[in-house]
Amino acid sequence: MKLSNKTAIVTGAASGFGAGIARKFAAEGAQVMVVDTNEEAAEAIATEINGFWRNCDVSDAQSVQNMVQSSLNRLGHIDILVNNAGITHLPGPMEDISEDDFDRVTSVNMKSVFLTAKNIVPHMKHRNMGAILNVASTAGISPRPNLNWYNASKGWMITATKAMAVELAPHQVRVNAINPVAGETPLLKTFMGEDTPERRAQFLSTIPLGRFSTPQDIGQAAAFLCSDEASMITGVALEVDGGRCI
Image (cartoon, rainbow, N blue to C red; front, side, top):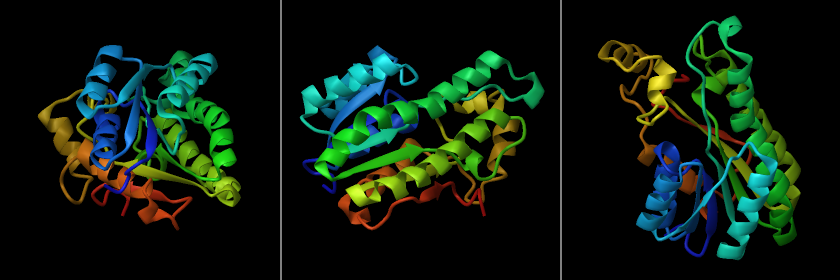
């Protein structure tokens, strides 16, 4: 029960890695606010883990502000923020990616971190405590061809994590990131362009441990980094990637 009596907001928590994080946090004793645009799936996860849920577009300032206020009303305070919500574009040459796709990737993957920080950091600074976890990607360290602007957004997220960590350390707010490799999530097909045995084999050949990451893998790493067991860890980008970045 390493998160006993903790409260947490997890964005993009209705499926994939976010759902894995929400489930693990609840199993470790945390009260969790499940945040997603998929209301039906968010409600299902919240019901499963005896938590709360809220519809939120993390790229919209008013939506994030409303979500944070609702979370404070429900949870009383916020100990942990997990910026997990993220999207990608279909693989393709960088010059062929549409401006709309670029704007959507940067809004969801990057602007969301700015908006949640703007609304939650003052609360954590006032309490002189807190943990923020940004779910980045191995793409931010070892980019795959044709996922160009997604790669760039995750590289930005890693740098933002380190910048946040050094600025918030005097306020006892820790900020870390985790870098999953491609996993069994709804985004896998988009990453690969098509979900075929051949494409899966091609992706798996780049992962030394020979398998995709799972929501459980990411949940376990997230729970550790957000717990008091990691009280001396801030500004790291932990690779949970089966050796992909070696």
